[in-house]
Length: 502
Image (cartoon, rainbow, N blue to C red; front, top):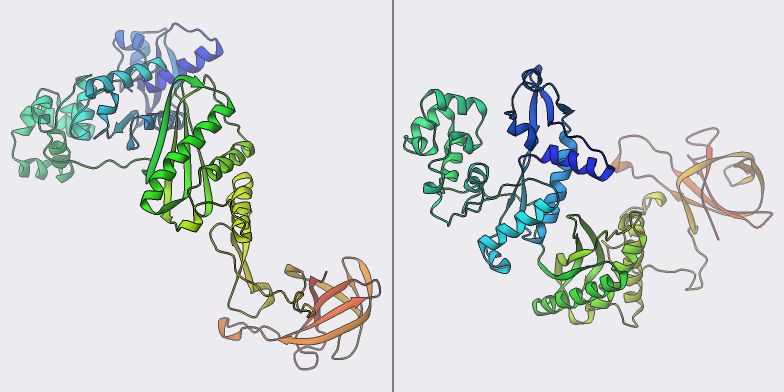
């Protein structure tokens, strides 16, 4: 897209009703001077080209509309176009600053062949207000060179050398200093360059330049790096007329989930992460994903989780002029046994798993946590919180059901809070204490439970703790501890409240 920055501005001006017929150029700093980085069609017809000094351009055409370059906005727009191009192939890579690579190997027949596919892409991108140049070749470097200097060319694999032979050396996309040196040496076309010995070129310009030349000639290939991972399996549906209603969208997700389930069932797998892509008719694309705690392939569950996700979006799904393509892809799969095909069972553990997935879809997976037991006897370190979907539930012993009095409080503070003891029994529990500006008189106490710190894990000395279960005169129950042995370690020990009993 040779005029992406100017096309971006003109689209925004049109949406705001602004009219400006002056030639438009984008200027940015190169070294210590302002130079043109992009020009619109009118400025190009007047002789302005990227790389020309802004002062010289104004001398040629005084009535210029000059806008400072905004590479961040250009990159964001290019990423949005790349997302939309995933309707043609999942293998889409960026070619900064204004280009894209689409690996269409094996998919051109879905669009009626190479020529029909190129024509469809050109029409769709042009309709969005962007100038575009396209080419199809067996290597990405050859396709890029042809798109810039031979728009619309289609080259079959193996014929790249003949197709690019007449192109100027600028088509290689090499550094400006290399291009300048090649021209000074009389090498003006790729054909002249291809006839030179490779060791001569490597000695003068480096091995990376030789690799670039071979890729352009079709003798080697540098793989592209797709922006997003390719899903393990996917299903999609296109619409002759764009859809906008929520009921149709939900029905489409259910139907696509059923198609995915059929493929996953043959593999003996289920999905842990499912991604839905909504392609709008105006060139926008929205990506929404759900995650599950266990492998699932039940279409009804997938549809219900997507309903929760869509209902909880802070930025609601806007159909605009409608979605003309909806795609569902399983980006993370794992083995799935027959009993785990769905959550619609009467088993309580499956109900809990579905509840976790439902809450995670609505509030975010990082907000739904589960306690994971640790190998330590220190109370505040006995458990850590992890995302509930990442860990299976652990069977924990409930002392209340066994008829025993709980030895640990229901609510444990993350950090013990200090208290002021106003009266205490020597080497025993406190009689009165003040916590959070409130005075408490102790009615009964039980303890101590002595807990020594893990001296083998730290070099710093940590006092031993004596814990007491305390009940005040109002019936409130606390879990207190004294930091340090009363007579041995400190004369005036410090007291803390670490938790509250129910």
